[in-house]
Image 1: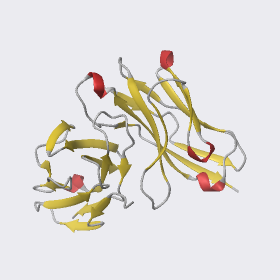
Image 2 (image 1 turned 30 degrees about the horizontal axis):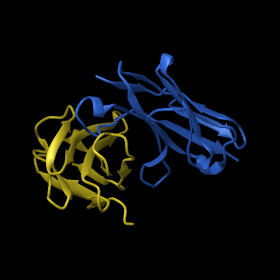
Image 3 (image 1 turned 180 degrees about the vertical axis):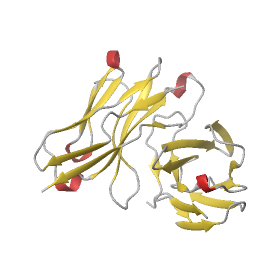
Image 4 (image 1 turned 90 degrees about the horizontal axis):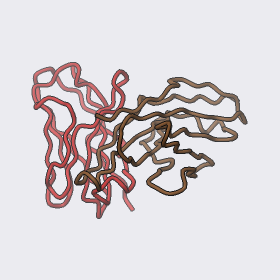
Length: 114
Length: 118
């Protein structure tokens, strides 16, 4: 069974640009969550999608957005990039929708903003 | 808002030593509790989880954790660590969304970097 796949693995962008990250969940999983991991702030929840609907949102500015497609694949977009957006972005997929099933994480996308 | 505290940021142990990593959360309601591990260069993996029932839960690779509701704690233990346990360990909490309408939002602690020396 294939795991959670995130593309690309590495990205270098310039301040002010925008970026789109992609996540393919495990087959059959309809919940996709996104997290930002930085040395200073640790792992912080960005948002969660279930059946194409955003169910939860973390405390991030509106520059961070996402969407989920009918095949459960999800994309995350960050507009007007800032240096502080440099981080590892993790995607997690879950089978259930009530937080009582395991979240499977991808390898992440390492975003560097210069 | 819920929060999770991990008291030890860096722990260095010799092989065969016992391990206990502390985790406390702040949330008044019922919660689902998790410990995840991130080995060098690898993705986050689930070690163990607690939803209900026996507060002493066993996970993979000989790890166990005890949920103490009165102390809002979910400490991770292993009787004898191995060099291969060198990794970063994260405690995570999910407020029982069956009671609040759904969701897989995890709140993580800041992590504990464990180094096991031969």
